[in-house]
Image (cartoon, rainbow over all chains, first blue to last red):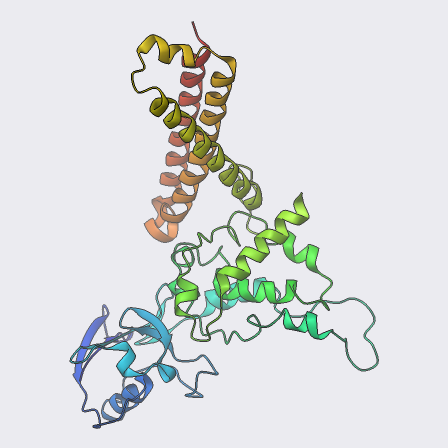
Amino acid sequence: MLVSIYRYNPETDTKPAMQDVEVELPEGKDLMVLDVLEMMKARDPSIAYRRSCREGVCGSDGMNINGTNGLACITPVSSAVKPGGKLVLRPLMGLPVVRDLVVDMSLFYQQFEKIKPFLINDDAPPAIERLQSPEDREKLDGLYECILCACCSTNCPSFWWNPDKFVGPAGLLQAYRFLADSRDTATAQRLSELEDPFSVFRCRGIMNCVAVCPKGLNPTRAIGHIRSMLLQQAT
Amino acid sequence: MVTNVSSFGRSGLFDWVVQRVSAVILASYTLCILSTLLLNPDMTYPEWQLVFDSFSMRFFTLLTLLAILAHGWIGMWTISTDYLTTRMMGGKGTVLRIGFQLLCIGLTLLYLVWGIDILWGN
């Protein structure tokens, strides 16, 4: 199978280029894209990419696979490439490339940091733990599962244009995760920090984030809930 | 919170509500004009003028004009802060953005005065 991979080493290259590599795939096996990358790296150790758990949990190997963001470790080659087609691997879009498929995630993490991704509760802590009813706990389903792979935010045009101002779908999913948490007492403060024209309202609802999330989460719905909460608070 | 001085209401929530309310006004006005034209296929110019002689139609038209200007300004401001930025265009981004926004404000005010003159002028 022909694999076209984005190559860029800022120390030696003046500009990025796509490199075509022919990879011999074993018969009768549907490999994951990460397996193909591992085979390529065995032949050419200079190829750079991030990886860790190889089972869709750590979120390290987010990349653009044939035009769609996804995790290389849980994307089967058969679902990414039509029979006889070419596998095209590029880094996540909208973030500076460090080398080959490795991007600088600083802007993504800065936005995540902005939404204060931790429980805020100034009440005296109880002896054992802050209790939550099963119904309240259920409200966090579909929110807490985010692994911060950045596939959603880097597939979002609003994040491409304003990565320093728009929190992005991943950050906003986590913002709502804490807004929806019955144990968190900083709701008003959290909402007031999201009310400007960029942080939340730069989302135009095109739902690229939903289409590419490898965990099947729905940041657009969470953003809708944040908007409703802002509206309720302000009217 | 990201600060800004040039958005319509300096609040994402306010702009968002204005965009939605103005969209409803624009849709209602479109339906009103379309139904007037469809129900009166042989309408003459004097009859068309008669429609706009009523205070309610003039008021509705002025409301629609205000809605279109607010809706348009929020949209153009969004475009300018997406594409005419230093991130996208380098150092000249800020000058281009402010110039574009001033042009949009000028046109918006021009259309407002012109529209009021058409509706309420002699």
